[in-house]
Structures are given as structure tokens and as C-alpha cells.
Image (cartoon, rainbow, N blue to C red; front, top):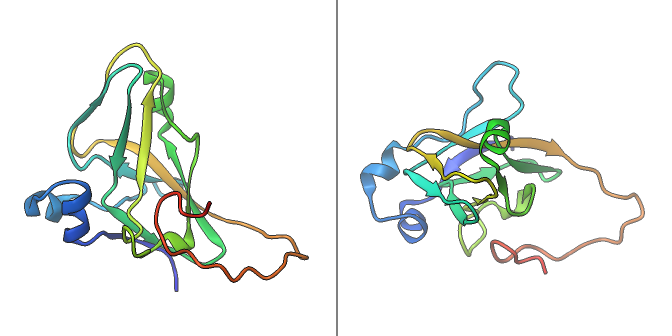
Length: 158
């Protein structure tokens, strides 16, 4: 099965981001910057600014396919947190493998960012702001069988 990033459909892009075929065609999927980088860098699809004390949801335009025992952990890039005071509102984003292609939003995920700093955080189109790291996870040996399957998108497991 493997793991890889995919663009969401143009229909989902129009719904979540904007009706702009050119922007859809030109944005890039996440990549690693160096041979031994753990994280895949997410680059801005559009310019954005987050004012001090403001929260914004930054859509990635991506969905991710991975093995059933893996998750994608989302973090801000180190320099974003230390230089600008910007962090994820949920500390760490966790994208489960069954989030992929869910019927609500195709598995489109975002970075909910909060600026706790004192200056505006300005990001230009194409600049990296976040990173994703794939991780395997373990379960307990005596767990009862879980038959529930994901039917919806963000926040649907409670």
C-alpha cells in the first residue's frame, strides 16, 4: 500500500480554498528539504498573515495515504515557533490513516495556527510553515476488537 501525499480534487479545493484552477495546478505537495530530514515541509498555497492573538486555519490542499498502523504528526517548523511565537492550536496534529478519502472532505487536512507572539506572522505563497512526520504506533495486546469505521472528517471520532 505504501504512503504518499495526494492533492485533493479540484471540487474539494474550490469548496475549502478557492475556485482557482491555476492555483490548484501549481501548488506543490510536501517534500523533505534534506536527505535526513524527518519532516515533510508544507508550503503556503496562498499568502497569509496571522496577527498577534489570532487563530487561522491554513488548508494544505493535501490528503495522505499511509499504512493502517501509521499516523502523520503535524507540527509547526521549529523556526516558526521560536522566532514568531506561532503554534498549532492543538499542539500536535494527528492525521489517522483512516482519515484518507473520508466522504466528508476527502481527507483534506489543515494546520490550525495561533500567533501568541507580538508581531504579525506573514507567510508568502510557497514558503514553508509546517511539517509532517510519519510515525508507526502500537496498540495494547488485550484490546477488544474495534469494528467502528470512520465515516466523517475532522472531529468525527467523538
